[in-house]
Length: 181
Image (cartoon, rainbow, N blue to C red; front, side, top):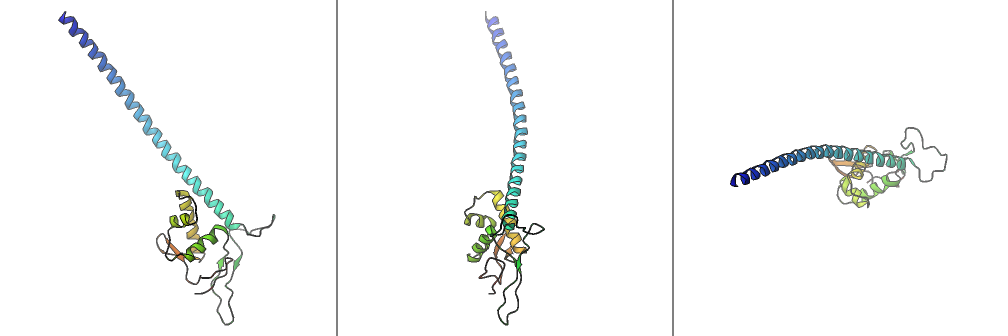
């Protein structure tokens, strides 16, 4: 009877060992599938971020190109950027200052914010201060906008990523005119 009991225990152990090996293989397969899905998810998230940035940039460019008093059928000009550059309105005996593209919409709000700030700001700080959602796409879009404002002469980048109002811009009219300090 003891021999029969030992054979039964041995048979159960063999079945358990087989079931354990099958479970181990299933775990390995599921783990491989999970890694593949994680890679696909990461790629999809990167694409979503890039598309979000592109959409925000296109919307910003469209907003920058729309004159406040635009009428249907009015042309903004060729090249997609403002062609309405206004020169510094020099007073008697003053030398004309630099010319800067007109400010409208979010570009104007951004310059006003930085002009009123007592310290340089990062793109993330500007996004938050303007009440926008603090997400990567918005921050990257704002960083690009700030860099364009630097190249347009409205802002300066004191050190990498820190933006402030350019010298010579203090009481701007928002339509491209500048006032000297």
